[in-house]
Image 1 (cartoon, helix red, strand yellow):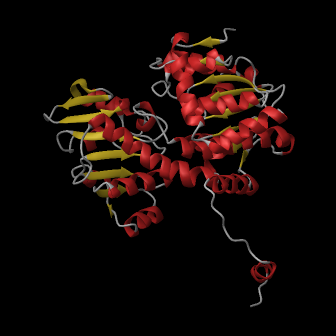
Image 2 (image 1 turned 90 degrees about the vertical axis):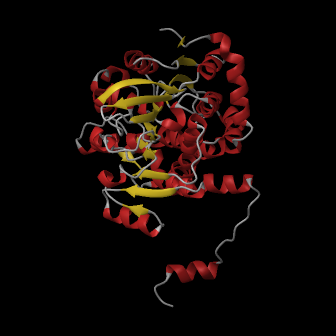
Image 3 (image 1 turned 30 degrees about the vertical axis):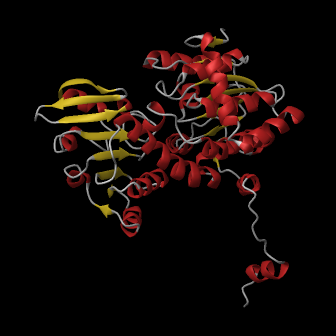
Length: 416
């Protein structure tokens, strides 16, 4: 098997520079790299990784390799792969199979090539590695101890597999760790989505009406940042409790068929399909902007939009305009794929430092405990969350209080 299938190895110097930049701003992973070089926790093990292949992910790969892992790497979205970063990893001796703009067929070939070294541990983002093993190539999963899943969408897929009794090995739900979803999903998505929208449109957010589809942790961050930028925010939901939360957080809440007529900018973040349909688009304002912050490009019905459009054109780099039969134009960022990474640089380095620290520690947890975990989705332990939180506070030079023995006794007792 080839060691890499990338765009151009000569791009490596630019990629190395990007990786060094994020390393300088990821203190948790930097400390882990030093520890891993000494202790080699993954010595003799093979890891296959499919995560958005940009600089922060690349540095995670470097850290795992420092721990002795034989790394095989691909991206989890063809538009989020940065060719110079992929080249830098290949230049460093890792197996890399990804390039920007790969077709669906090429993307799936890279997923398969990433698995062909028969990994012991899988690190997935959206569940494509795990799904390929279970649906088409079970022989590639014979050596798998277990793995880790990065995102909400992937955890949903894994829990469905566990429910149906088909999951072949334990998978840690990294997304559900406190040090992941409370920070990555909320603050990371909140900042990076608006980074993508603003840099790609070069339009002001203040004074506009923003429709946020869903009100999970990612949507909370998107809505919070939109409001801070001066937008009026509308939330659409299917969950009564989350809808109530959005209302109490100060946002208007309504059905999509009504919100569609009011919004200037629409952002989806649900993990579901067709949350914005052609029927909604036909009632939108001329020039409405659509962006997806969910893992897969199905939240906005892009197929339906293609059929409904009279024509389409490049409105601006990373923005496709669709002329509808009613004479109005709908603008979609990043082909309806994950806008903050397909059309920008993804989450800030400090945020991914937390998430990838959870990934690295969860991979060690799988290695040490896989025989006792069963074939199911496993929660990240409270101990891992606590260790990472303490290390992050230390990096900020922040000290917090501790309970006294008397306070511990009081909290453990039912008597006042």
